[in-house]
Image 1 (cartoon, rainbow, N blue to C red):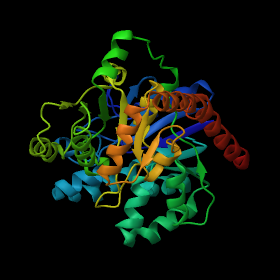
Image 2: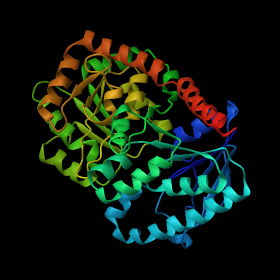
Image 3: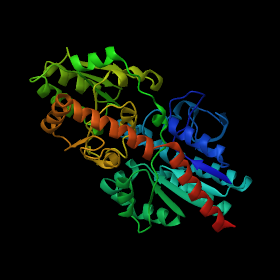
Image 4: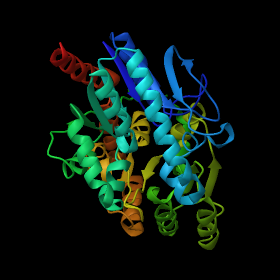
Length: 401
């Protein structure tokens, strides 16, 4: 079967860090007999490419130096930070519609699968109309929240777009419920595949002794409001009154200056480390060194929160106990007192208590770490994800034929 993926961003060169899980999904689907091409916007003049054996069809929408509305960061955040980028949106929509029309006239696809349907649903609708194909949407969380919480005027267009879909997928039950508030269709929940289940934690006596002596708490992610890192820093300040501890914050983002100041104000410079950006390949020692991983996510001022929390899966794959906020799709991963500990968002005291509880109870920490690791292997493995996607595609192709 022949499928066209419509996406917001895709690898611009071999080894690019953009959406590596999507590239892996496509590779594995190809191994299962699904022929996938990718439709995506240009980045600074890039044309059609072949990336990791995948046919990438790019559409131009403006002058070369201005074609960076996507790929570098989330488009909505970029527009909010620099409103001048809003002027590119109409050109982006028109450029994409022209290109999708040409492609679907020229090539015969059976399915168009739109990832991040806001605003790409319009490309999917046009492709379906031109090519007579089946249409699938996958929602990752942010776009559904953005529309229901902030951009209410888009509810009617989104309802219209959802009615055009032949199947709708969400990566978490939370995101699925958000979509069901907009339309009456049944939503399938298929989480992102994870290669993390194959990580083999090394038994290292010196590392174990180090974790027991001065426990290290780890956070990995973009330094943005919805990650709630300021609440973690405040919690660490409380924990420090009871025991020695360190915090490592891996990542970069707009909140860095604010977080630096908070660390100074709380006199935590000697125990909080900001690493800046670290490539995925270089994350391994950070996970191995930490005693505990924390994702203190919140519902931010835009109404956005974690659609799933993929980094939690990675931490659990290293058999590290995890603590996370009880928001968004996180609850699909962290089952309170089973695969990890859930705490109320924006509550540094509750977070501090949970940190102390895990660090003070070795049997609890080991039980959560082991259960979390098993959960990742059983629920978020590639085979399960690919099998479910192939089943969706096969059922739709049967209807076509």
